[in-house]
Amino acid sequence: MDLDELYREVILDHNQNPRHRGHLDQPTVTVGLHNPTCGDQVVLEIRARDGVIEDVAFSGQGCSISMASASMLCESIAGRSVEEARALAEGFPDFLTGKRDDPPPGEWEALAGVKKFPARVKCATLAHNALKKALADGALAPKAAPGS
Ligand code: ZN
Image 1 (cartoon, rainbow, N blue to C red):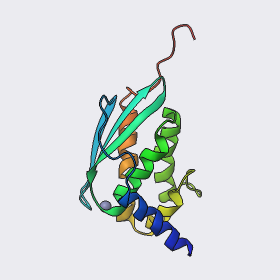
Image 2 (image 1 turned 180 degrees about the horizontal axis):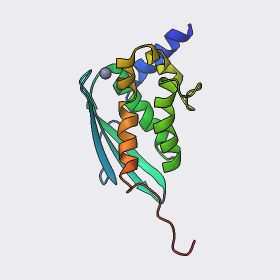
Image 3 (image 1 turned 120 degrees about the vertical axis):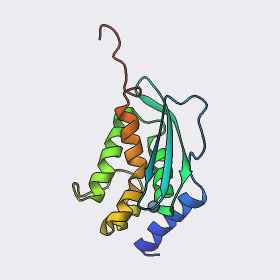
């Protein structure tokens, strides 16, 4: 199996078995974003406590790139710190737009092929942009303990 095939497998697998697809009972933040170029819609629900993302879910519909990326994003940030999530939300779009050379840790190399197609970059980063919006909300940020 060559690398291209391997990457296709990763994307296909996330489409067929999406991780964290659905809804949370009590999300801290819910954000939706739409990519009009392709018609993709992604809604992210995040529950965070003490600076840690306890759980995350996505819903929506769109092309295989946008849905695989949302599934990969949820898998990557579940159980991680808000700061790690922020690093991914910024790092992956920076990788696709050439601002950094290496993809963030995980399976992100599988989506590196979209670099050549600016319209598809919007599909691949839709979930990341939704995450950025969620992080900008402030509700996910850890609250400093009094006196520390
Ligand atoms: Zn798309």
